[in-house]
Amino acid sequence: MPQKYASILFGLLLSGLMSFVVSGIATFRALGMSETFFVDWMESWIFSWMVAFPTVLVVAPVVRKIVARITISN
Image 1 (cartoon, helix red, strand yellow):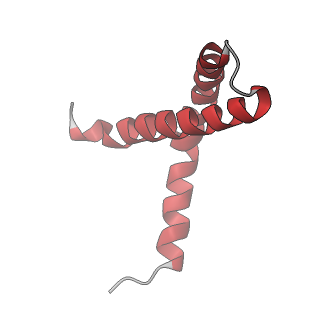
Image 2 (cartoon, rainbow, N blue to C red; image 1 turned 45 degrees about the vertical axis):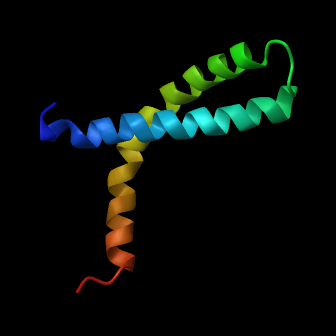
Image 3 (cartoon, rainbow, N blue to C red; image 1 turned 90 degrees about the horizontal axis):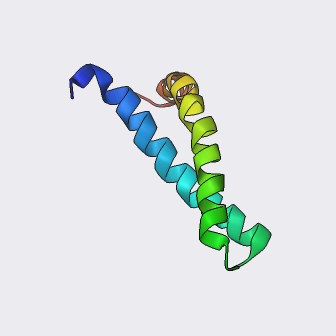
């Protein structure tokens, strides 16, 4: 994959992993360990990822600018 897609791939992987973990915890807290836990979790995860991915793409550049302003470069 060309380097120009690195930030999109980063956002895809980061949002996928983070939404996977957070939706799993939230699903467990809401429903407990039921017979349908895994299916409920996967449904929640897919929906969460659809929201998280574009959010990461929009928010990441803003966060990078904020971090650049509050950190000291040598």
